[in-house]
Amino acid sequence: MSNDLSSRLGNLATAEGFFATLQAERAMYETYLEYFAVIDQKRPCALAGACFTEDAEVAYHMKGPPMVFRGRTDYVAFLEQATSAQEMTAHVVGQTRFDWTNGKPRLISYVTSWQWFTANAQLGDLRPAEFTTIGHSEDDFEQVGGRWLISRRVVRPVAGLVAIGAPPPLK
Image 1 (cartoon, rainbow, N blue to C red):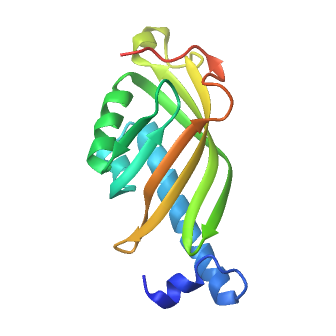
Image 2: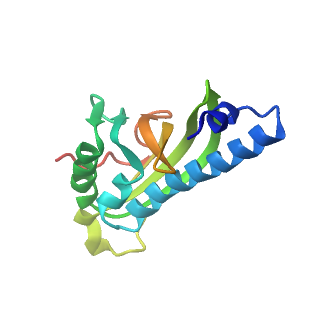
């Protein structure tokens, strides 16, 4: 990213800054949504990992002690293990906003995660979700090779771990 462009990002005082920021935010949001689409469509976890920088840090504070993953490879290994227990998932992104600090973008949002586990697959596809939670996600982005990727993610429960259902099975 050129210094000229980076100095305009997050600066909404000029038309150039406004439109450059809007374009960057749309690209970041597309990356953000692509991650959830890959997970929900049960596509290969490496495709979800491609939404992150090689050296990304991901911290989940959703149950038990925080789980921290350093690097895309570490995070994809976690995703492969975590999604193997899920027959279906649906992530619903709620309130979102971008925060720009010194030209650095952060996407802050609420995400509701609905999960159906393979252990209950015999109950059919139209059963209620076995587990639902609401997370507060903060994602920092970096532009890499012309694409906005997540460089840091922190997810915490909004209020309690379980919104509906019971906690997911422990492995």
